Length: 321
Image 1 (cartoon, one colour):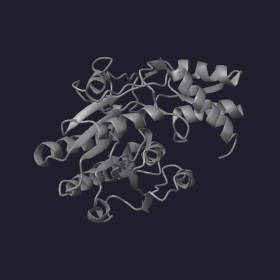
Image 2 (cartoon, one colour; image 1 turned 45 degrees about the vertical axis):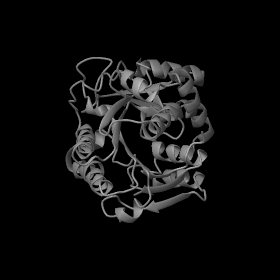
Image 3 (cartoon, helix red, strand yellow; image 1 turned 60 degrees about the vertical axis):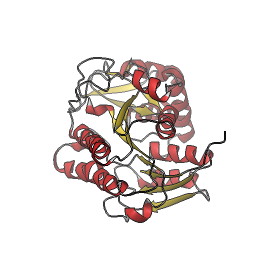
Image 4 (cartoon, rainbow, N blue to C red; image 1 turned 30 degrees about the vertical axis):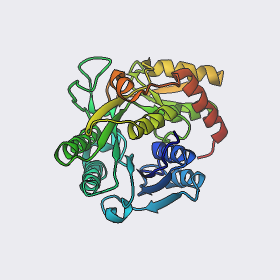
């Protein structure tokens, strides 16, 4: 049976995950409303380039802030909301910048949920949560029932917004689903994130700043797998307030990832080791048995192949800022 085309809204539509999600929704034949504040956490030029690639008659973009935009009008007729917007970054979330994280990650989510409860068309609201909510987890792989204990203000705000999604689901029936992303990578990744910094330095033979010893273990998840998880969460029956890990199953050290990149570069990498970042964790690793059983999702891109694609993208960029 042919799938019914839907009207979706993607917040953070100009970002890494958001723009890839919009692209997939358009490919499927859906109509998409995108919203993004185009904040300057990293160059808005990169976000505008993402939007340029999304030019389509079924895509409408609005440059606005979720804390002030007319959400009644924006949500009119929308069947699925993919809430990707938020202020990222562990390092910057301390101190004076914390207010911005509260505004972008907590207040904006609460306002969106408050308007979503009154929507007559909404069938699903998919929230982009984070593995940062676990902090130094009690066990690995970490399941959704394990105790969250974030180690950064960023993680605190992501957990608070996730709790809001669960509260609006249980009290008002808002059909929320929260996806806890484990480090997303691939072509188009933010310039401040590790794999983009590593691959671009490898291509340009420049120095890599590595925070900590590099023995940290991470569960990296390729961008197309993240997009597929969002689509699965929107298409399949699921209880309101559900929470799922979205993890790639890589469980590789940062040094191990650097060794793979060094193999692609075919020359030694120049690595400068820096102190561990406050709020960073030593290990992440997600148990995906719940999402596999409930939504039928599992990752398909292994770390070596994903890094190869990321490296090839970095080669295309060359030394362009």
